[in-house]
Every structure is written in C-alpha cells, then in structure tokens.
Length: 192
Image (tube, rainbow, N blue to C red; front, side, top):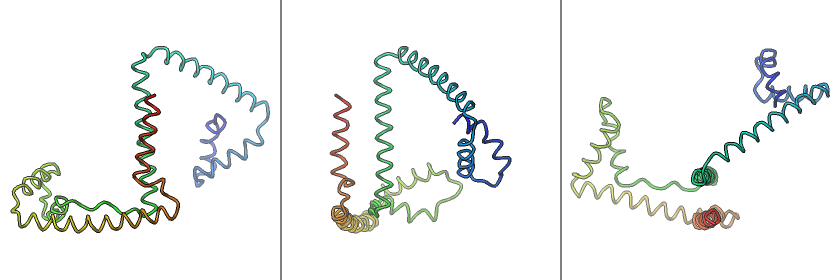
C-alpha cells in the first residue's frame, strides 16, 4: 500500500485515461519488479508504523472506562446489524421480494401530490395533508381504505407465493421468521 501511495499520482499523470482499477494493475506489475531492498525498507516502515499504531491503540483502550467500552461495543453491534439488514434487504430485492403496499393515507397523499403548491414547504404540505385526511368525510376515506385493503391482500398472496418459492430454491434463511430467530440468537450471545 505504501508503494501504491508513492507511485499512484505519477501513474495518473502518465496514464490519464486509465481507470483506478487499471492503475492498480499497473502498480501490481511494477511491484513485482521493485528492487528487494526497497521492498525491505517499505516492510520495515510498515512494521514501525504498525508498532506505533498498536501502542496508541493500547493507550486509548486503557484510557476509556468500562462503561465507554460497553457503549462502543453496543454501537458496533448496532452497526453490524444495520449493515446486515441492508445487505439482506438488497438480497431480497434481487430475489424479487414483493414490496409492501401503500397505506390508505399514502394513497390519499399520492392523489393530492399533483396539486401541491410549490411555494409550500414539504413539511407544511405534509401537515396540511394530515389535517385533510383527519377531516375527510368517511365515504371518501373509505375509498382509500378499501384500495389499501385490496393492495394488502394482493401483497399477502404475492408474499406467500414468493416465500414458498424461496423455500423451494433453498433460500429459507432469508425469510423473516428465520431472520428474527437468527437476530435474537445473536443479540442473546452478545448479552452474555
């Protein structure tokens, strides 16, 4: 990495049309031909920097309280779960999981989005929509509720079919009940 950092600017100038990946490949080619004494010097620099880093890390760890360490661990667990959740969500989308249907209120907002005054802020418009929804006569509100119910029923059928398909294809580990069970097990392990 130190070698890469030392030559990348020069290579970018020599090969301005190269992508980052092509530059990395070029550095790798050059690295294989670098004089062994230069490689040893770079390795020595790395070892010195690594030693300094480890020392500073130990000093830092010794300077924080047990409560602070616990908070750091909790934040790391939260970040791990957020990353895992994001990766799972992306995988589910790739596998064609049906999207949740819109609620009656969101359907109402969609119908009124076209008449939104551009002078009104999004926050004020949302407040106005919320008030209009609250004051909407029951017959008009029921149209949105019925549409949302139809969409919900359609979603349940699509989701059931999708889940059955996932089981057939061996992806039951991505189903919600399985994920909750895994997550609860992981949380219980971290609590211990």
